[in-house]
Length: 418
Image (tube, rainbow, N blue to C red; front, side, top):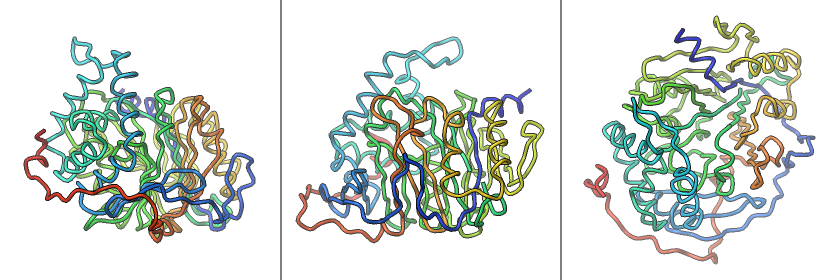
């Protein structure tokens, strides 16, 4: 049955958790929430700049699409090059993972096909940014585009809980990403602070060289997490990672964010959790090429038979059972510390690439990444940030400055010409 396939293929859990006071997280793997951390400006480029906060790279991008792309490429040049080489050559060429009718093709061939399918549905601004990223990083435009469309081949995981389920009642949104831990993406992890010209500021928990998003939050207190299901091959629509980005750059409310996905056109089978810190509400959602379904907190489904009041719980098999069990056991007592443990194994998989905990009302968030030796993110240190504070930061004026070329957006380039 098609519906059953959807939810059984959903390696996903989602919940929305309400908390008011985080205090200090007592877990040994969790970073202190104190604001006294070391910071260092690495370099500047135009209005953009790169810094480290407690050792974690934070990339600030500001301006037109091309300018933000160039800043990204120039400031993370080595990481962009290494990351693209790994995913497009070292790892991808080892695999033949895509079936298209009777054919088996390499991931790179499939990605080039995806780009052609999706190009008419993509706003020119994103091609402009990829052009800038290629110029700044010294990569070819074709490689940057291929790298940015590779999420359309792979699928992952997430989590969220709300209101009476917690100790204090504010929204909290957790997100578990289970995705290609052996590809070394964690070695190029970065928090990107976007201030796009004419659009909303937002943060992207991401990796060097990627302009799309699978985990993010904007200054209007909207957070989004994604995971994939089935439907490989249904690529004639707007790519998932750019749908998420579009929602984060434009949505001022939960309804706005939902509409971004609802109004499509969409591609493969994807599931999302969207949270709104201002209204203290959230939804789970399937937004696939031919189906759009919203699941509200506490709502039951024939395949999701253990709902919990004020919670959105989406998962499959034993993982759904475990999530429902832990949520019910902690109902009414959840704090930030216990919410973090909902992202531990077995809820997170061995391929747990990153975990993120959002408090959208305050724009605080905590990030953990898998280690270089492939230990899951759930076992690593959490780093603490706050979007509203990141937007106030300025680079050190004595830091190195990289040249930022003057360029007017090219209509031909925006159409995707090389």
